[in-house]
Amino acid sequence: MRFDWKLLLLVVVFTLCIAPTIISYEPYSFRWDDSVYLLRSMTVSKAVWSGDKRGLVAEIRSDIRPPVMTLLGVPWGPLTSWNAAGKCFITLTVLTAFFAAVSLFLLLRIGLNPLYFILASLCAFAALGPYPVGSDTHFFATGFLADSLFAWIAFAAILLIPYETKTSAASTVDGVVRGVLWAAILSAGALTRVNFFYFLGLIIPTLFVTRMRQSGLRSALAASASLAACSFPAAVYWLRYGLPVLKYGWSSSFGHDADFYKVTLSWFLGYEFRLSPGLLLPVIFVVGGTVYLVFKRREVVWSRDVLPLLIMVGYCAIALASSNREIRFVFSSIIALPYLVGLLISPKAHEFSRKSAAIAAIGTFCCLVAAGVPMLHRPDRQSIRKSEEVVAQAIDSNAKRVVLATDSSSLNSDLLTIAIGISSRPSLELDTLGWRAAAGRPIEEDFHVIRESDLVVFQDKTAPERPPRTNQRAPEYEQFVQEHTGGVPITVVDDMRFYRIRDRLQ
Image 1 (cartoon, rainbow, N blue to C red):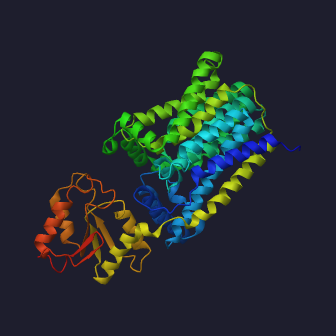
Image 2 (tube, rainbow, N blue to C red):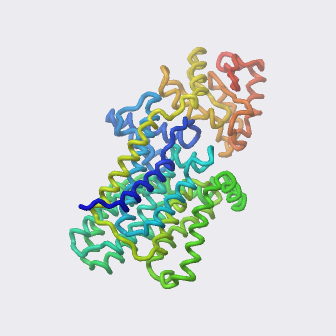
Image 3 (cartoon, rainbow, N blue to C red):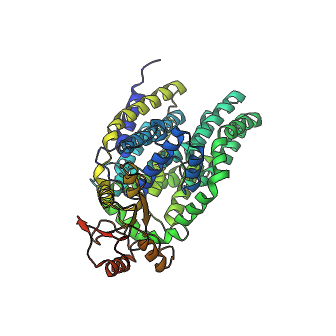
C-alpha cells in the first residue's frame, strides 16, 4: 500500500484538534451530577464482582439515567477507594476516543474535502478546547460527564447515513456487517442519553430505506435483522427499566425539573459566547457554508444528501427550545454541523479505502487513549475533603446517623456518600434535607428527621454554588436545632458547623 501523505495530514490534524476537547490534565473537583456517576460506578462494580445480582438489579432499577456512566468502573474490579475515580476517568476516555475514531473512519470513507475536514476539526478545537482558560465548554467537555461521549456517538450515528449512501454493497453479508455497525453505534447512544431516541426515530428508517434503494430489499432486511439481534441487550434494558428514565428525561428537558434551570435564550447565548468566544468559529463556518449552498449549490439543498444536516439542526433546535439550557447539551451539534456542512459544500473528494481508513482510525484511537492515561491521577481528592471531615467528626462523636441540612457543590449527599463508602465506617447512615422543601414535604417531617439523628451538619451561605432551591429551609432548620440544643455547635470546621442531637435534644 502506497504511503499517503494526505491521509497522514488529516489524521494528525484530527487527533491534535480532538484530543484537547476530550482530555484535560487539570485537577478535577467532583460536584453534583459527576459525583452521582462516580458513586453509582463504585456501587455497580462492587455488585458485579461480588456476584450480587439482586443488588445490581436494584441499582439499575433505581437509576434515573441510562447506565453507560454507571458501568465505567466494572472493567477495573470492585472499586473501594478514591483511586476508583481515576480509573473511571480512563474508561470514559477510552469510550469517547473509540467513537471519535469511528467518526474519523466514516468521514474518510465518505470522502470529505481535506480543506473542509481541517476547518471543521479546527472548529471543534476552538469551541471545546482549553482556550480561554476556565471556559464552561471545556470544563464540561473534559469532565466526568456523558456529554462528550454522547456527542461523538451522535455524530457517528448521523454519519451512517452518508456512509450508507456512498459506500454500500449489495451482498447479504455486507448487509449483516452493516447491521452490526449500526447496532454498535445506536445501542451505545441509547444507553448513554435518553435524548438519543430522537436520533433513533429518524436514523433507523432512513438507513433502512437507503439500504433498500442502494442494495436491494434482501440486503436491507439482513442489515435490519443484524441490527435487531445485536441491539437486543439495549432493548431489554429499556423495556424492563426504561420508563422512569424516560419520565426523568422529559421532566428535566421540558417538564417540572427543567423550570429549575430556566434561563432565556438570549441570556444563554450571550453568556456562552462571552465566556467561550471560540464558539463563534463553528457558527461562522456553518452559517457561511449554508449561505454558499443556497446561492451556489441549490441542487444539493433539495437532495437527500442534506438530510443528516437537517436532523442535526433539528436536534440543536429542540435542545435550545428546552427550559434547561446548558452548552453541554448541544455538544453533538457543535461537533457535527461543521463536518456535515463541509460534506455538502465539498466538490467530489477522494474516498479512502476501507483498509486505509481503518488503520487511520486505529492509530487515532491509540493516540487518544495513550494521551488519556495521565487522567488516572486527575481527580482532586480535595473535592471530597469537606465530606471526609464530616465522616471524621461523626466517628469522633460516635454518631451513627448524620443529617446534612444544606446542599452545595462542595458538600452534598452524593459526595458525602462517597466519603462514607471509602471510610472505616461504611455503615454510617446518611440523610439529607436539601430537596425536601422543593418536593413539597412538610417542614414538620424535616424536624422529625433532625430529632432522630445523632449529628446535623450546616454549611455557611458563602459556600460555593449553594442553590437557593435546595437550601430554602436551612435557616429554619438551624433555628430549630439551636433552640433545642443550646445554640452552640459542638465544633466548627472551616465553613461547617456540627450539632450533636441525640443526647441533647429534648
